[in-house]
Image 1 (cartoon, helix red, strand yellow):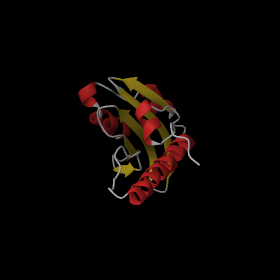
Image 2 (cartoon, one colour):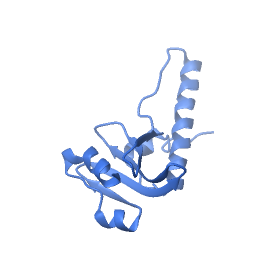
Image 3 (tube, helix red, strand yellow):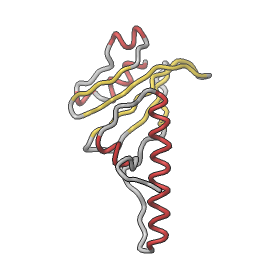
Image 4 (cartoon, one colour):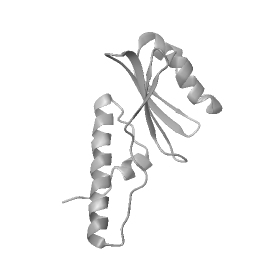
Length: 132
C-alpha cells in the first residue's frame, strides 16, 4: 500500500515512487513538475513505513509517513507563515519562536537524510539571517 498511497497523492503531476526504491528500500528524492520530494524507509512499532518531505513553491510543504497498510500520519513540516504583532516586542518574540521551531524541524529533516533544501525552505528556517 505504500507505493499506491504515495502515487495517488502525486497522481496529478504523474509522479510515482521509483519501483527500485520500493524493492530495495532505498532512500532518495524526486525532482519533477516543480516538486522536490525526499523520501526514506524505516520501521517502528506499527511496522514498515515510508517518510517523505514534499516541497513546492506554490504550496506549503508536507511531511508524511505512510505505513505498509496505507495508514497516513502527518509529521512536522516547516511553517511558511508566522504570526505578527503591532507591538515590536511581541513581534520579535513571535519571529524568534517561528524561526526556532522551523530550525528544529530543519535539523530533524537533516537527521533523516533530507538534506536538499529549496530556497523557500532555507528562508523559512531563517538560515539567511545571522542571529546573536
